[in-house]
Length: 228
Image (tube, rainbow, N blue to C red; front, side):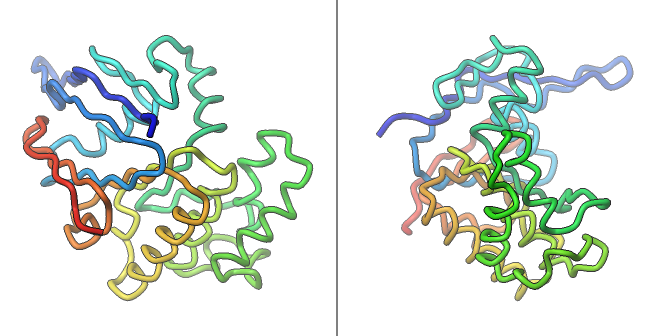
């Protein structure tokens, strides 16, 4: 199975005042197509920073990120944005829906950016898939947290991404709602053959994936295969 994501010798630091803070150091791992993969570790360990680098939202100080065969550091900002819109889906803890757009319009955005003339029809089908066919004309403020995250899931899968990055997808949800969203996430992921990379504090959620990468203090502490 070919690799969809290859991370080599990744390093990232931030400057705070006169101090330089190393957030990630010598990170190496690869993820195969259709794999489910969790990144876990305590707060401040560098998980979200790593996710941002993997997705091309930020640039490393050194090392390489190869996403779907493309080395990201060789791309301009616009080229990276184009690659993300074509190959990547995102689910965030705080949903990040556009407040001035309805649920249907939020889901249709990635498709419209690609010039898809069937954007509305496909968005309607995705909303039906996540159980929100009757909420398409509602704005985010008119939806519960669980409903907003289901809209975000539908949007994440709209462009049939090769890889989906989910950053604490249940972090703002109660346990019961979070469980439903997770079931839906894994169901859609399996159905569409997407690679799933999940950042989470929740070990129970991490154990649903095939492989678990543990980060502590910006370094890889462990990489284990989970029984799925």
